[in-house]
Length: 272
Image (tube, rainbow, N blue to C red; front, side, top):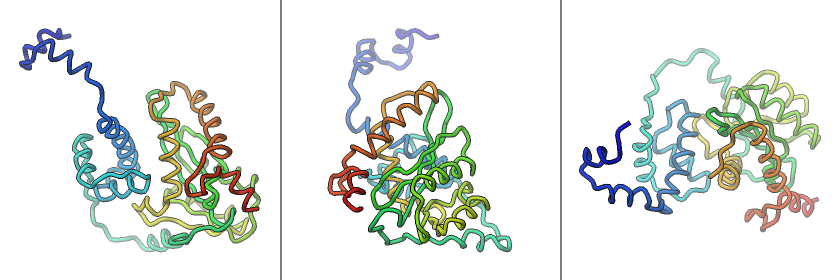
């Protein structure tokens, strides 16, 4: 390994200058850049490398970040991300019908009481050197987390288990809308059948439109800002324990500006 003295000589800097640089505190803007880079990496990877700066910018804005398009472009260069060009292809017969069977039923619509609209999504959380996946179902009206599951694989079994837990807990009346993105884990036949069995109408975002599920984007932003940022989880047991404590705090004590600074549980009690 090359010594500090040799490195300084190689790059034409003094040892004192090098150690002064090492000791310099991180600026607030640099700290925010790190947060933005993490969230941009998640969105970029979830898009399978297809998101460019316009979609990453809109995704960050949906999560509550006030950030310019130029800054997003700069951070993409820092991260070494370049959206790959998707090859133009001719649709196979039935493909449009497959994705078009679940329109966005919640666009420009806000629930006025609990159990009118549920929203759901899956996000990535780091444990050691690998990713785990958190699936969540949220009531759009009260922002209450109805069910959550943590899994090592992002698939329909994870979202099915989360849906089943929410249905058992709330037993909603027919007519409920269940809204999610177009992930394959929400498109399976079993998943759609369970929704049909309970009289639930399925709703989905358009492809590549995270801003069409803003309540989940906002929840993920709060979760990562409040719980994940600055922590390293070495085991999934440790992560699960922290999630359990945080989600109880989120439901029973965290004040939401959109709920007149009430917690989700207190808001539901007032709406009952």
